[in-house]
Image (cartoon, rainbow, N blue to C red; front, side, top):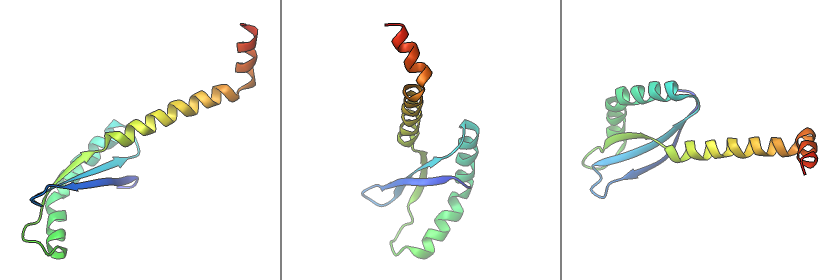
Length: 99
């Protein structure tokens, strides 16, 4: 999938589970599509890891959408819109007229 970023991963102390956090560009439908694809690919990814890892067990993969990154993106959009309003000379003139 294009536009997907793994933002972090955390492994349980017993190494039996790994939480993989990801972000994706796009709307809710795209995010749902990606979640389904990751669930389908779990077995393939675990088999691939089994060939690379030198530990006794291959951890269970738990994919989770990284809401922190989505929140940061949302806040950046709000700040960007606020900056545009401040830079618009008409907005400044209207503010001065109302004082």
